[in-house]
Length: 429
Ligand code: AMP
Ligand code: GLY
Image 1: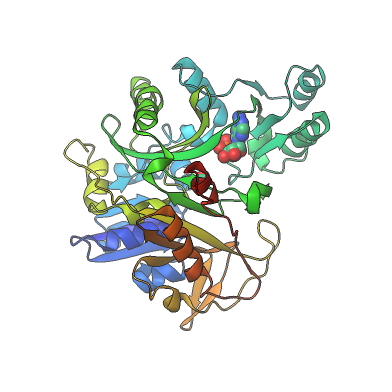
Image 2: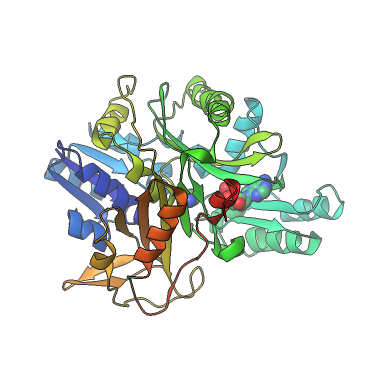
C-alpha cells in the first residue's frame, strides 16, 4: 500500500519512518515533507492545508491511507473532506478537533464532565480581563492563554499584575496571534511535573501509548521563552501503573465518551498534556494529533505495525489491535537554528548525520531541513531531532548526546539537559 503523511516536521519524519517499517507499506509520501522524508520516500510539494490539492493527489497516486500530522488541516476539516471523497484518513473531524482548536471549548467540556483541570475564566473583552486582573481576583503566578491556535506560543505565565496586563495587551489588543486573540482564558497556575500521554482511539476503544515528557522552554533548566519543544524522553517510570490507570479512568475515558455523547466522536490520536499535581493528574491541554517532539521519543519504542493500527483507526474499529512497546528508554534532543524561537538564519549545510546514525540505536529525525542537489540544508527553527534508545534512561541520555555531538551546522543550538528531570525523579543525577 502507498501511504501519505501530511506535514513537514520531525513528527512527520518519525511517522513516515515507522510506517515504512510495515511490510504492507510499499511507498511513503510526505506533503510537503523535509530532507528526511525525501531520503526515506517521496515528497509531494503541497502545503499541509491545501486540502483540495492533497485529496486530488491521493486519488491520482492511489494512496491507500493518509495520516495527518499537524493540527491546522484537522481544524480546517481535512478529515470530512477526505471521507466525503471516500478516502481513508486518520484523524479527528473538525468538530472533534475543537479539543485543540479552542481552549475555551476544551475547558468548558472538561468542567462539564468533571475532568480535573485548572480553574479558569473566559474573557472576550480586553478591558474586562484587565479589570478582573486589577481587582485581585487571580492569584499570581497566573496563566493567560489565547483561545485559538498559536503554535504553542499563546500561553503566558505571568508572575505579577504588570506581566498579566502585558499578556492581555499582546494577545487581545496587538493581536500577536491574530484571531486567536478574540478571547482569552485566565487560569489558575498548577504546580507539578508535566507529562504527555497519547492514545489512539476509534471514538470508543482506546489504545494507550507510552508516556513522555516534553521540554518546552528554549534554555536549560526550563528557562526562557517557550518553543514548539526542545526535546523529549519516554520511559515507563514516568508514570506509576496506578497513575497511568487513573489518567485512563479519570481523564481519557470520560473525554472519549463525552465527545461521542455530544455527537463528535474523537477518532485519531488524542494527546493529553498533563500536570501531575499533588492532587492528582490535571489536564493542561488537549492536542488532537501526535506531539512534536514526543513522537520522536515514543514511536521508536513501538514494536507493533503502525500501519495496522492506523488502518484500524481509519476503518473505525481498533478493538482487535494492540500496541506492543519495548521497555527501553528513548531520548530525543532537538537541534535548532541559533536564535530560535526568535529570528534565525537558514540554508546552513548540515553534516554528520550518517555518522550519528552509525549507532544502530540512534535515529536522526529531520524537521526544518531540505534536500538541495544532494546536500541537506537547514530551513527552519527546529532542524533535527536526534533520538537514541537504551535499556536505561541514563544510557539513553549519554548515547543521544554522543550522537548530537557528531552533527554540525553553523549556529546550531540544543539544550544540554534533556531528560535530566527524569533522572532526578529516579533519584539519579
Ligand atoms: P498549553 O498550550 O495550554 O499546554 O500550555 C503550554 C505550557 O504552558 C504547558 O505545557 C505548561 O508548561 C504551561 N501551562 C499551561 N497552563 C498552565 C497552568 N494552568 N499552570 C501551570 N502551567 C501551565
Ligand atoms: N510538544 C508539544 C506539542 O506537540 O504540542
